[in-house]
Amino acid sequence: MSLKILDTCVNCDVCEPVCPNKAISLGEEYYVIDPALCTECVGHFDEPQCVEVCPVECILVDDERPESRADLELKYRHLMESKP
Image (tube, rainbow, N blue to C red; front, side, top):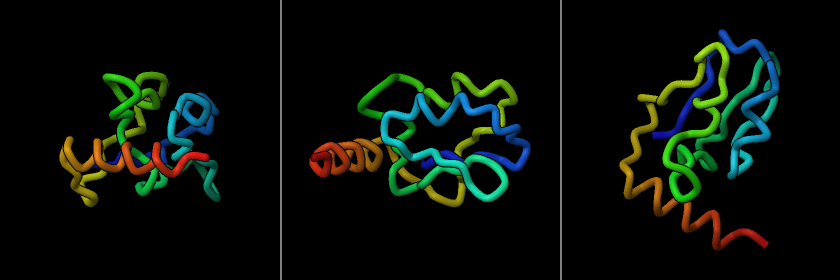
């Protein structure tokens, strides 16, 4: 599953730079995660880095976007193939 950032985000700026897929960006009011780019760090790290660094624990699994580990690995491979 992709991750999502809740509206309790305090815009502390620590999640964006640790995302290896550049899936996190500043939205209109708080940071958001692009589900097309989020692999929960599969292929890069054992744990989602944004979750690890978030001081307010506002990054959760998005239950509305179910993805298996295999789906996330496939997305990771596709993203790596698309890199220039």
